[in-house]
Image 1 (cartoon, rainbow, N blue to C red):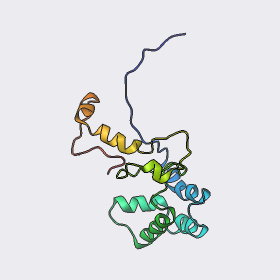
Image 2: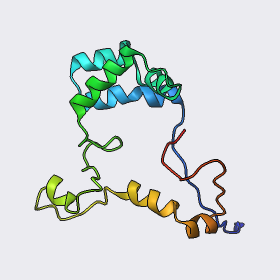
Image 3: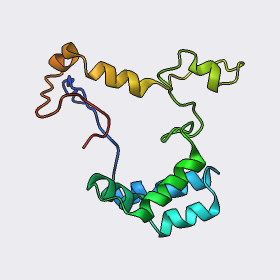
Length: 147
């Protein structure tokens, strides 16, 4: 058996495998977890799916139809539902006691729901950027999913 040398690397990425499938599964995901109604699921899959919404949003040309659909989805899911794991609390950076506000008092295992905020802070530190040899050309700050 040949042993390969260890690589010292650091990767950051977004596991999007295929845009249309990944984006358009959002409606099915929210609906199957009981977070949006049947009627909202129907308009989210027919009138304006998530791929269309994202395309319009990033082209600064959001149609009234997509705006209405996304507003309805947002209204039904609220800001207290995490977009990647609907079973976890969400991070509310301004609240020091977020776990008390959103979690049952008897939970024995804590999950850091603010990891995304902490990662953003960490990756914007100059010493970390220097260590990673990151060059922010034309970008003032690292963000998650920026244009």
